[in-house]
Length: 198
Image 1: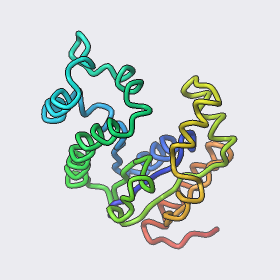
Image 2 (image 1 turned 30 degrees about the horizontal axis):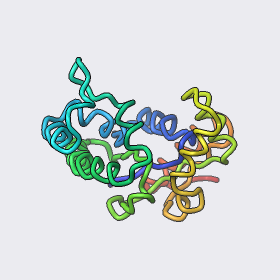
Image 3 (image 1 turned 135 degrees about the vertical axis):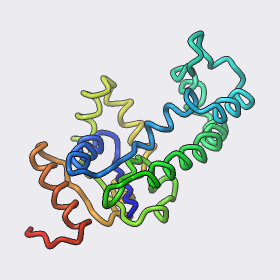
């Protein structure tokens, strides 16, 4: 069973995934794969240089992500070009991971399920949810960014209502880590088809 796990910035997706891993569930971070693909995958790298040139290649041969982000942030056509290079290869890597996975279900940690209209790829979808003030507080503490820049990111993501509309399971993460752990264990039991006492 392929389970998509999603949530907005600062919702606590990574913490939830960590608990699922402690329960013996294999998971892959789609964002992490995407971030490294231009450095690690020769096919993606060649396509990128053909499309964007080599001005983004640093002396150590890595991609200058800051410059790339700055250049494409407000240019939808460049974002689309970059996604057309990265996304098929990310999907390929995820397929390979799923085939190797030995846990009873496999979690794909992916921030943009609603936005990419990829719900049909998953057998079940978990949304890690919290209110917007909690998102802002967590994301600004973690990333050392201003409230304004966090709000801009939130504005570019699906709304809370949109995300919840595709959820098979919702993990509420408005309070403590202990509560998050209880919510994850409950969801894990539901995915295993066990009866859960509310």
